[in-house]
Image 1 (cartoon, rainbow, N blue to C red):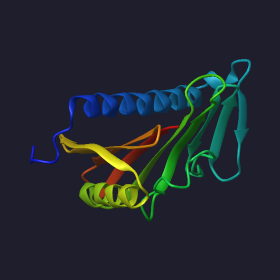
Image 2 (cartoon, rainbow, N blue to C red; image 1 turned 60 degrees about the horizontal axis):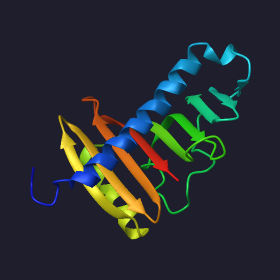
Image 3 (cartoon, rainbow, N blue to C red; image 1 turned 180 degrees about the vertical axis):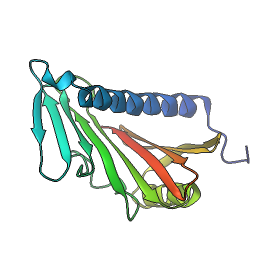
Image 4 (cartoon, rainbow, N blue to C red; image 1 turned 60 degrees about the vertical axis):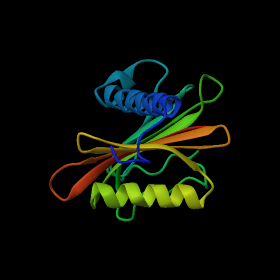
Length: 170
């Protein structure tokens, strides 16, 4: 790994915690799509735009082509890369656990240009880049500001598109 891209041990651990949280949110969304939403206590709202939102006291998950940015996405965190098509967004309720949000999208771009976009946007908004990594073709950017942490996982789909999962622990 080139100098400057080697994550510190604590930064590396934080990065994996962030990625783990994002994966858990994505799995929750997937399970809800598969019918778990019919369980008592989960409200299901099917919008006419192709998005379905599942919510309960712990938070909400929106899946589908009409999904939008999470309602609690901080204004000082980067918006999606231009041309993004959101397929998943989710929020968690701070009164029932750790507060946070995540978004997953696809975009026609290179993984490098998306990673550079996030690094530039985060730095200009006062975030500190804690670590970056290029692992088997996937790029990871982890940042911190105040008590908040953000992780971005970018994968090249080999067809001119990339898939991006970004999450923030608030």
